[in-house]
Length: 436
Image (cartoon, rainbow, N blue to C red; front, side, top):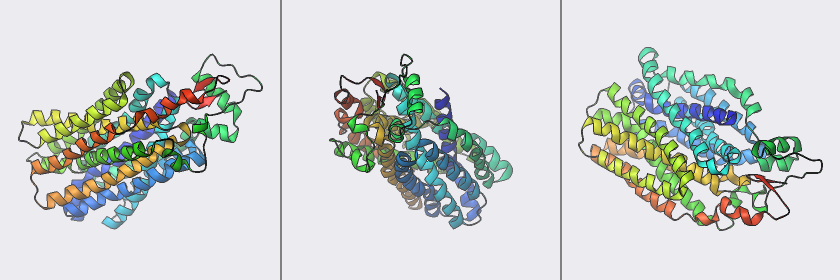
């Protein structure tokens, strides 16, 4: 539970750093005299950074270890988000947010991999989604605290406040566990024995015990190539596609929902309430999705969530009462933000332990292209005076495409499905990826 708490905390900080730009966007646009298209490019600077963070720091963690990778991510996104608040020009702001984005993006695949490895298999989805719900919680904090800070101290204050988490780095280095294949590769037997006892209280270490991983979980020199091997090529591409569509929906909403609601006639405070409800829905949806993912097939749960997301966003395009908009935005948050979290849990279970962070990282990295495109595309549509209905329908369509992509994932090639054939009768399974 301590590791769950630490991972939830860092992912909440990660969520705050990401959401704060959308919360402050109207004030930044006014302060820097930016057009909607320019503002979309400004928001996307962090998303470009996240693309590199997903691809590089997920894979790097397989080489340097999870604690160092997590600590590096915290340093990057804390320091450079704070520096963004001190920038006077759009280009300086974009550069700081780009570097912060590398840390934000690198955090996600690493904490998903950590939680997937330490969680009991029957509770794996809910533990990962509980941890990841911290991301939406960070967005809620950004919406609540950000509103007050901006009113009292101006938009730079919400970015400067994000520098404090760098103080957590020494504690994270001591608290975040290494991956099991990494410990096996380095021959760190004492740590493996301790982890084995945590995973299986009945296990007692004996002299001569040797820890090993199944063949498919050995950490080779090309972890990315391993994500495409053993019949996983099509499924890997489908994971990328569903993540692209999911992040397109999420970042369209997180970047432009306040502005869309303001244009629909809501005051600044009321428009920001929609962002709060979006993230409240995200927390709720991630937890419910995790519970359902452990009880039913997680693939089917994810398909249903995407279809509900598309339906709720399509209905938002019509003229409905304010109370109905509140409910629909919460449902949209539950099934877009929630779908990303459930999708990460699914990918974490799909890939073998030795390439888990790489598989999740590349999925998020390819998906990040959707996140990058979304603020720009919606900004262009708004510049063209696209109607509210047209904007919401443009955000809804990717939900249908994401559901189709998940349907094409070959669940039979997941690491969990393959494991039983890889463990010989001469070995005893202690936990995910660790045998004696």
